[in-house]
Image (cartoon, rainbow, N blue to C red; front, side, top):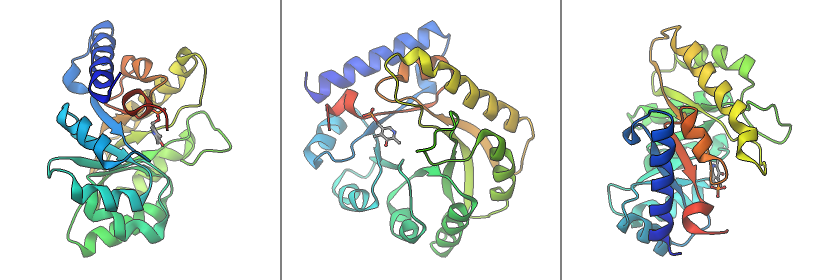
Length: 227
Ligand SMILES: *Cc1c(COP(=O)(O)O)cnc(C)c1O
């Protein structure tokens, strides 16, 4: 299958997952994770309707974004070092991978200098994996409160990278936990925090994530093939 056929397949699977769970397809944004892929692949996805692209390296975003049509939106989804924040801000619409208060503070400072308000998600290490970045579920609410005071970032929700598993059902509980955490935080009505975005689900498990309330799913291999 080519990129266009892969996209059709992913979109119809999303539609079926929405139907199963009584959700509208409009609630789910597909982010085409184009890391390591050449510009031609992004252009092919764009021509087939993709408008949201996910990358995990600042250098790749800085190179690819200016070469894509203006309505192609780039999302930073990978671990971000504080010394690269300034460089990436002009090229992205959202940073999904905010994993420390210090990183949020750096984004606030740099966005302020550019007279911007940066949309961010807090990354939560729901499964408590040693190898992963992110706040623990227990730390997240306090981090939201602290970061909500920074004037040049706006917390839009939460993101998680679920464990790599053979059976996507094994991650259902992870997605349920992130959903519940976002509901709990939303109830606190914290100023400057919306909790309207849940970024969860990848090629192996996005249908389960959609069933459990994902509003952004990040699919790479399922669209562009193996890396
Ligand atoms: C690479 C990556 C994805 C996409 O992974 P696939 O399994 O190829 O769909 C999603 N999220 C993050 C944070 C990634 O780094």
